[in-house]
Image 1: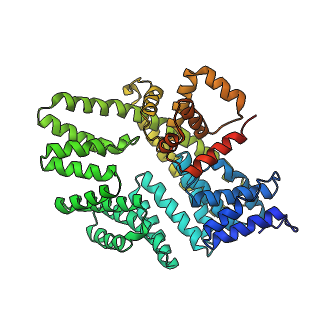
Image 2: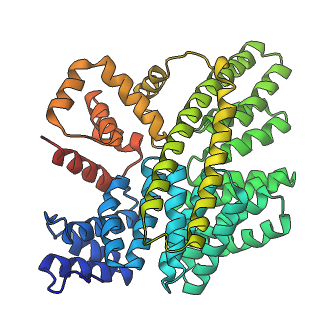
Image 3: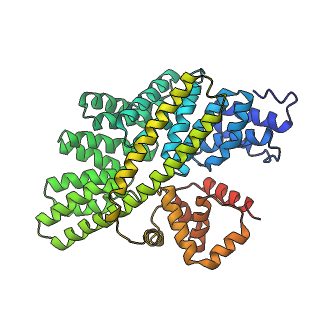
Length: 467
């Protein structure tokens, strides 16, 4: 607890009450209690704990904040030896890095730090949060085995907690991983688990479950059952993954009309890499049926977008190398974490391995540099924004490229922002730019993929940055 605070202030007592309510799964009551507390000025104890609670409640509401919000709590809980809250803080920072800035390497490291501390606690909710963050990061990094390991730990923790909701979501990831690994007996087992828990998924997740079932049946070439699952999925919500599966089925059946209809809905916005296979197969189908011009246009799009993709990846690799170096320096100077040479090596080896892997990818990408097309990428992103395309999956690098491009093309607007606000996060720039383009509140929420509460929270944070 707070060893430096013998006489706790009223603010600290209120924050601890909200924290206790959250620990008892009284989310709504905790949020109501918390939002009655005025943001404190004190940076010694009250503000770090306030930021910690804001992070906890934001995570529960899927309202992701700037990862820097956790810097004060992390320093404070380290100083006071509160390892449980420090582990939670690391976990929340990992979640924010993953969802707010798409910084996978840093997210992975902070989650590992949380996992290391959580081993000495009996807090299964904390462990579940760490495992579920772990499988989300691994899935985004296409590391199937790591994703499976974390999802299995999350599922077992859900079982231990007797929490069907906390069993359902990792079970779906387990199903997808076993499908990727072509372990069909295990796929069938966890498909049954998911079906038994189907009512515990929200609508989007339920659609994802049926799409993953379709993928499993497609892999077994059981196209009729796969089609049923995919149709079940799109019957819940428009699901690009399910439409992709349906397109593949109709291409194999030579059903051109249905293939065209589904292909138009199969491309995932802002996720070109996952679209390459369906685009290539569809182009080959068009070519086979004599539609050379249309096939050629798709092949050309693949070629141009691939070059853009490599440019983004190279920039992301450079950013990740910088983050790895920074985090490693923090570790090296942290005498509390590095208590022994064995612990030091334990932390150093995975970071060095990760850095080596990132460096290798960076070198491979640079060998393709002479093939990169000089298409103005910022203009491409700007054109997408004009079409009201969802940008919630843009990487931090893409957001920065777009914001930089727009501000360079609108010097008066840039001067207005610079004279009005202090340093803003990139999401704040995107928010202001969308409004400058005349987008309505609903359009901004849809494009950024945020809730009404997240919209109001972001708007409030921007207002607080006025000079």
